[in-house]
Amino acid sequence: MTRADLVEALARRANLQRSDAGRLLTVMLDHVQDALVAGETVKLSRFGNFTVRAKRQRVGRNPKTGEEVPITPRRVVTFRPSQMLRDFVEKGGRSGRAKS
Image (cartoon, rainbow, N blue to C red; front, side, top):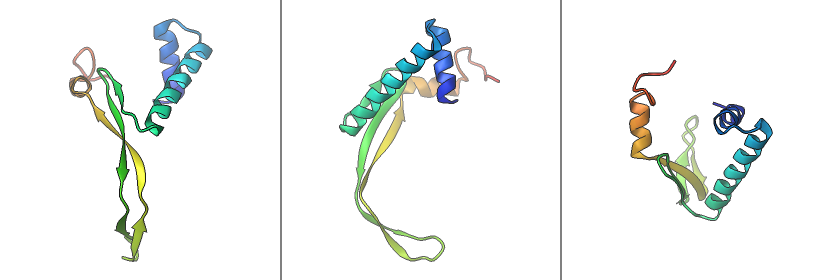
């Protein structure tokens, strides 16, 4: 699914113009990104949680040469799906059967 697919689905389900749905999606994603940059957890009920995790510096290995390479510290985004989302995916969606 692409951003354009999301915009189209949002426009259709919320009865919006595609341009309005596109702006709405952009604003929503901007807020999520800003919250994550600020170190906040983004909790979307019935969907899951996005968090930022700090990773320490560590030593990695180049798989081709075997040479040890330092991996710099960084922040990574993690996602943990809600139990409701996991159950929904496991059952194949709303109807309980796989979608084609």
